[in-house]
Length: 326
Image (cartoon, rainbow, N blue to C red; front, side):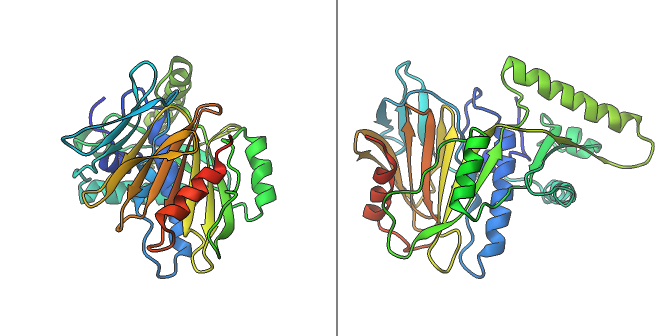
């Protein structure tokens, strides 16, 4: 498939996806928006690292057992077929050239400015440097942008989960003192480049946008099509500590696999959450994380601590266990 960057720039930098993973470029672009909204709310608190969220890619089956590589210190989870469905991974050292990164951000910002909350759009940039000549972004001509809605009411958020058939995401039964619901978001499925049916939809979309670009004599380089959507792929809950509305984030995603970036200074271990095995990452620089798979619902859950010192390992474990149904 070659080197693919934006809209999976962070995916390339912070995760190690398998070829069968679900529509990762769309999902990671959605993460970009989620981070944008969080950044506005931070008011001086430490930046919410992109790799904390974007390194999570969803797509697999039943989680059965853990195996650790002795040489690398990484943890893998396999399903009954021996396939890896959850793993820790090193961050990539690769990055985008400044010119390419700036161009992509310029167009992304233009598209975003045209979207209302809840709107999803696909876009094509008529630029040979972006699509053919840069050596990075040559296999991914169609990009996606989504403007999320912040549901400030937990009741309204739950209604949206039902309406969009989003992954179930209930508030933890246990919360540390002072931590409470801030807002929730859902993110839609977009046309995927993988899977026979999805690929047809993606190719048709790609052809429409490229035909518009080829037939245009206006000099315009950006071609946008807003997309209807009804099904959600991920759901997020953000918890406030009274100072930051994103002190803790919880993600629920349908699918079959998750790749968790483990920085060089982070440690990882297998822990037991009631009857479920999970991965716990301890990382002072990027925040602690805990991730597990619910085989009954086919949902991967991840809790991320975004403010240093906000929670202890026992707090995080207790939160996770309070979300698991016996």
